[in-house]
Length: 259
Image 1 (spheres, rainbow, N blue to C red):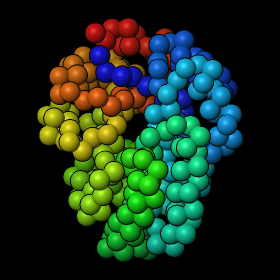
Image 2 (image 1 turned 90 degrees about the vertical axis):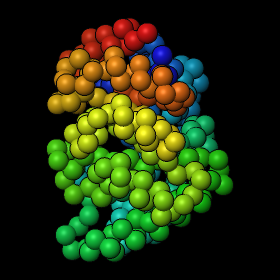
Image 3 (image 1 turned 30 degrees about the vertical axis):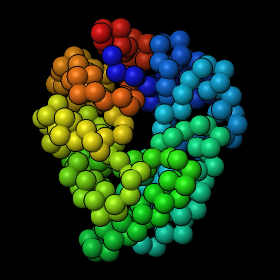
């Protein structure tokens, strides 16, 4: 059975954020992730992990102004210093939380920035982050996010774009974060794609499509997908990053059904 983690930015939102750790543990999860830790002192989050015997699986580098619609700043040429400061902040949190993976959101390319300028900025920023994180034993993940439904204009919207970036950066600690929901929208053929991409995949996330709800609400055959993840020998975490269609606990039937 895959090692499942809960994304606390999406699951158990019926309670305050700090109470979600205990809810995740009670539901049977052993790992947690969330979008960003930066609203809370790292030591406070560490205490929640320890109290509930949970592993911090992943979080994202600072994304810019999330509430204003920014979705990462790694491709923005006028935000390089802010990006680099964010790498230092993420490392400080990862050290306290014992987290060995952080994700870089590439960002939305502004119409005023040329394609080549945005790409070269992204390459330079990822290269910088990879070197800094490697010194701390941390893997830098890069996620492809669909540009059809959720984030039009996102710089990395296919696994091929991520692999092109990984190849250009050429750092041993840069890997692919494979999100089943986003890749079902952009590419499909999930099992064969994961099998081909396995050498580069460091982390997997999932939600059903359409709707981004729990398994069983959409078109993805999760029984087959989870079995394939096991069969291909993937040893990383598989994180539930969906929006429950009702109460979170009522959405977890898929978890008890996985063999």
